[in-house]
Length: 147
Length: 147
Length: 81
Length: 81
Image 1 (cartoon, rainbow over the protein chains, first blue to last red):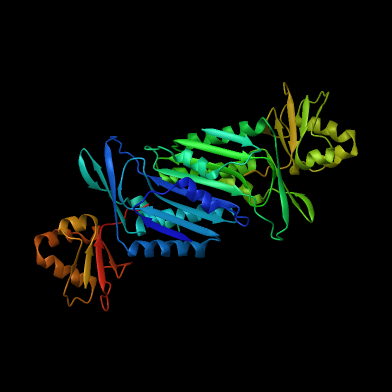
Image 2: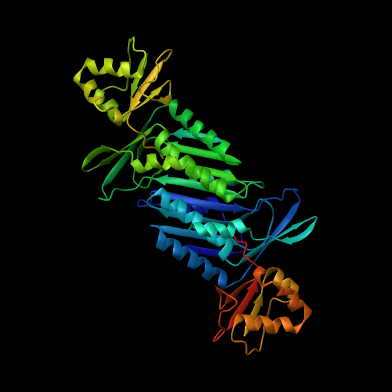
């Protein structure tokens, strides 16, 4: 299991290739990558991501451990950036390896649902109109009910 | 949309990087990669994948088109190999890009469920014990009921 | 009409494709004609529930009509992905 | 005890962390003390339903005890992923 909380960008191709390498016992590998999406108005200049150093790593490790308890997983990877990002920049990725595809998919969705609402990150969108903290959606909280 | 049915291996890192490149309008990218898994007995020597040239491409294009109708997708990629593979070799991958993670995940799972039972591929496992055609599972057919 | 066989259907019948002269109007009628030919065909088509059929590269049922069909394929349930 | 603020809570209060001398035995009591300090605190803690709290880096509730706690953090609902 690898968990990285970093300001630096990551190379999605290299990460996926390294994660998938030599898995004779794992039939299924799922990855999710989150990208900074422009606003509907098309004028997002930056996204700033604040986090809680110390708690962030613990919270993510706890979420990944829960996923590993619940599904038969060979490996889990979580990378999450913080700091100032531009539209089109990668924000984060998760990867799961499992013997069967259902486990790999469900675990990746579980990780995403919990990272969204239970890992201490806060996003702020900067545009010509000003700076706004992204507001947590009810549907993100509701998504946890499925697990 | 890119669909490739090929005997050659593919570079998962390069494929994912190319697929993800420059998506300012797509916040979510999901990939699934299928790998030849060794048998429980640990003595798989090869997997042979037969397909139906002509129908294969049409069937995959049809499945991808249905996914694009049902979810808001920016792009879809499907690569599926045929021929003789060894344990640990990549078999296939799908990638989906969508504004939101739920769409990207669901579309990728839909593609996988349909590729499993509705794309004309047949797998044969070769081991010390002989050669056996992989038998379709009831659960793979049942998986289609969810859509 | 071209008739194609895949996976264990191909192995049991012993060839991947053949051209068949037939007056069959449905897939079922074609299956009945093939079954009557030789034991290896009878064996391959013994249990239709274990088989799938495509007409002109589209999955269909055994009661599908063959009018205008150029290509019929028989195979076991698919195992892609 | 170290008290940390994140996102708009940090902006509203005007600092990211401070050391607080307190006899509060629960998070709620600590909030009441902070609210009483100045308007900027009162504003930040006006609506607790818009806030989340972690004690020693574990998410918890506002009625959580503070016995032995070294670090309390207040922040809005998280928006990771």
